[in-house]
Image: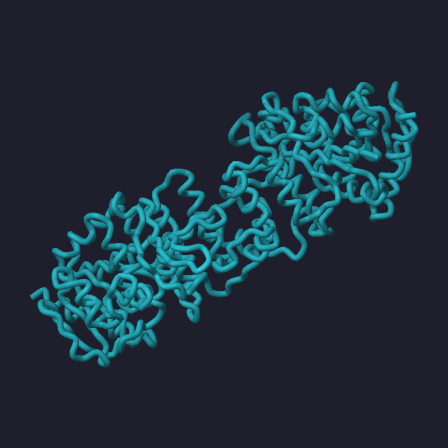
Amino acid sequence: MRIVALAGGIGGARFLRGLRAAAPEAEITVIGNTGDDISLFGLRVCPDLDTVMYTLGGGINEEQGWGRRDESFTVKEELLEYGVGPSWFGLGDRDFATHIVRTQMLAAGYRLSAVTEALCDRWRPGVRLIPMTDDQVETHVVVDDPERGRRAIHFQEWWVRLRAALPAVSIAPVGADEAKPAPGVLKAIEAADVVLFPPSNPVVSIGTILSIPGIKDAVERKTVVGVSPIIGGAPVRGMADACLTAIGVETSAQAVAEHYGADLLDGWLVDEADEGVAVEGVEVRSRPLLMSDPEATEAIARAALDLAGELAQ
Amino acid sequence: MRIVALAGGIGGARFLRGLRAAAPEAEITVIGNTGDDISLFGLRVCPDLDTVMYTLGGGINEEQGWGRRDESFTVKEELLEYGVGPSWFGLGDRDFATHIVRTQMLAAGYRLSAVTEALCDRWRPGVRLIPMTDDQVETHVVVDDPERGRRAIHFQEWWVRLRAALPAVSIAPVGADEAKPAPGVLKAIEAADVVLFPPSNPVVSIGTILSIPGIKDAVERKTVVGVSPIIGGAPVRGMADACLTAIGVETSAQAVAEHYGADLLDGWLVDEADEGVAVEGVEVRSRPLLMSDPEATEAIARAALDLAGELAQ
């Protein structure tokens, strides 16, 4: 079986670990969001790709969901001694090595997809991880800053520094219009038996991946099953509600399914708390969706695959 | 009093600490060797500038003489996990921060002299530290490699990886011919009451600095006192003998003074073990030259200044 999953960071990575356990024989291709990428200290940081890589490769900080296990912060502290920030982005020493290798390879002319493959040589995540694009796409958020007026800031500044406390006027993946899917992305989707949307952020993760010209069209031709990131009107984790509000979508399993739409979505898994969700043309199933441990996560992934199997018949 | 000192790494830095103690009221400008600089992991590393900065700023690893105190090596170990070396160059986590700041500033268009000034804002070394040049000059060493034949390698590869075990056929500061002294270098020399040569390597430290067009001429017009890096026919530390052999100079206090020559040198401090050294046109004094502790080092610096004072009369 060939599976393609579009993935953001923490929630997506955890789901993928369950998926790998649920379908150990499957060939899984993960198309990773790079809209959160940011250059810090002259180094290229790809938070979502790294979260997937570290989670599936056994290097993740489990409690935190991002960053490396047994991490130290000497480099960051020293940078702050030089007065060089930002202080609000938590780059650890082990993590720095990843960004140094990536930046050096990019500077040598390798594309991000080739760099990601090289990094995965170490982590052996058990899936093929491809960035959505090799082109630079950065999610920017327009906010009404009480001090500085309306302005666009990098997604990470909004998400990590401001913790999305300043309402977003709009959110846009800058550069997406001109971007091309990375080599292998469209081919993997075309060859897939099923495309899965993990419970990742529908706006700044799945939405950003789908904004790359060509990807949405390719996905629409496939059997697509999504797992709702919203349970009982609240995001399972993170601040997806702030993103949904910005694009005028209610924070509910129902509204997110309608936002994706029946052209895209064939099946939709919602939590038991959201029983009753109904979208014409979409097969909705309810079951426990909390990824509380590896077994629960594996069962969710299996349910998504089972639904896809039914829909493909 | 205005003092200019040309300095390499460990020996130079220790001497400078003594000099600062010996002349607390003096305005000291240090012209630092950058021929040892190397790009590693996409980062610009300036070993001699950093050794001076860390030593005078209180951040040096005292036992080792280079690198930071309380250092850890997490980033380097992680890079090696990615298969990214070299493994033979010891960059610690604290040290990495320095190179990250430097590289980011250079990429932003700042010159090395401006970057060095910015880094010194943190370390407050109590001297003005200027790189010899803002242009790229790299000391290359020609060796007869038993496996790969005659070839030129970077100084650091010869010095650190091979520990100078492969005899040098020749040593050259590549790029020096085209390089210009960094802003402030010539002005500092012109304004100096005395120019000191600390017991740094006469070939790859002092020699490299003097190879930048304009510096040697400016120094020659000044009262110059040198401190012999050779005691009783052996380098005080390091492997200066391997460098001297490569340029056909004997490893002795006498031969190094003759190599500098009376046009350049006015005074020459040698160790008591080298009493009898005599060079026409150079005032030679003998005294203990082992920089065994801060007090001994300060006394050596004071002796150099006293000799300069006499010569200037």
